[in-house]
Image (tube, rainbow, N blue to C red; front, top):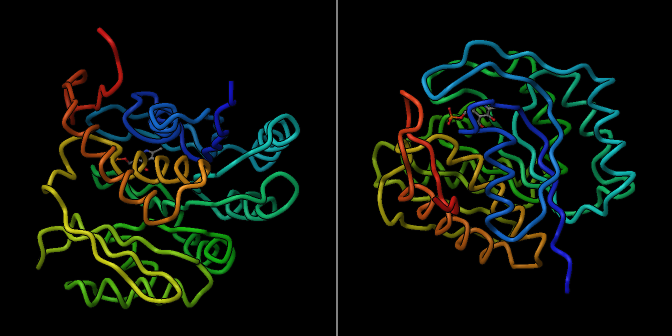
Length: 264
Ligand code: PLP
């Protein structure tokens, strides 16, 4: 039997399972990959709000990375929440070395849907200077793309310009998620070296469950680990997230959670 691809997610722990590494792990498994997870911050949160974000020490982060890399051949990496500069530095020092030479999908998480900021103010420079050049793909939403590029994004053309700016800084592909694009139905814009492509949404559903950004980027990483092309990986992951959104339950008192793949 062929073993599954191993996909490493590096991000925050959300005990409610709606977002962060728990949601990533489910998305990876549902796409046929084996998930490994490294935690950058422990958050105290539920389906209603974020109460606390506690970054782990650089030392603990390094130990987590060494243990996983020492044992597994990693086929793709998904990076989510990097709460402070120390985490950005520790992670970027390891990317592209040893067994971490594989596709890297970066979801540049900044805020929870509830509005709570999850990163320190000085993380942005580190993301731009040190993380962007390692990224095979970045998946910012409109707010994140606006912050990363200091551009106002109101139209698809603005989203293309923002995507191009990140590609010019060394990120190979950028998927600007259009879920919050005011002037449009929520078209996603994929920018790469040679040009760009737009993907029309089947429906505007982005706020109907938690963790859609986490699941999309993890699913793309898993698809890339399985040697799919970037286009195929994006399209099949968009379909996966739509399925995840349509299989949801209100298990907590706040935003619903996806229960895709859970047998009852
Ligand atoms: N908490 C963690 C640890 C996350 O990584 C993320 C998003 O990536 C969030 C919260 C935000 O998720 P949501 O937008 O569903 O609140």
